[in-house]
Length: 265
Ligand SMILES: [Zn+2]
Ligand SMILES: [Zn+2]
View (cartoon, rainbow, N blue to C red):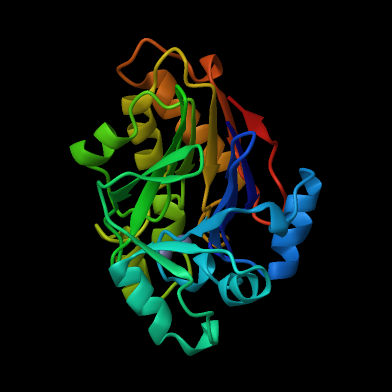
């Protein structure tokens, strides 16, 4: 299996996950043109995709959805709440008839040789989910846009080979930053976003000998920066109550505007 972050951050998210024969995008929060450029960088094209998985309806996850769906007719997988929210949004434009495939939390589904397991995430959207994608004995997890984590989420992300995890903000930067009060409260809330510290603590619960790669993503432009997210998460791992040091794992930051390494597991 392979994973590549095409874009990651509050300004737009798009992730490619594939096997030899199945290729999907998780979210398309960037323009159709940027999706195509990103896929080209890993020798793929939008035409090769078998579907689009949407986590939730916020614009940083679906800005390019309308264009991509119309141009390539790619099926869109999303929960009922997310589908209804997308259909209410005028910015998406008209979507082809029958393009949605309704999915449900905790009910696995299949796209060709890939098994996909959606799980609930606490976030201020209609019916948001994260995804665990599996092929043969490999699995990749994607968890962004979550205000907090609990035992349910920890359970869904056990024994992964690769993980894309939100490290949205530094709490102090957010607190002293320029965002209005209500927005700070929203981001810090249980249905907001995961801080660097909490990302590190969640990661500590997911570590095992065969976790090959960790991509930190969905960094806030205003309230975080790459080195800080990386250092904070590494520190939690090294100082945390586990047998590991951060250098035991390949941890990297998924960049806002450029394609990450293509990670193969
Ligand atoms: Zn969101
Ligand atoms: Zn988001």
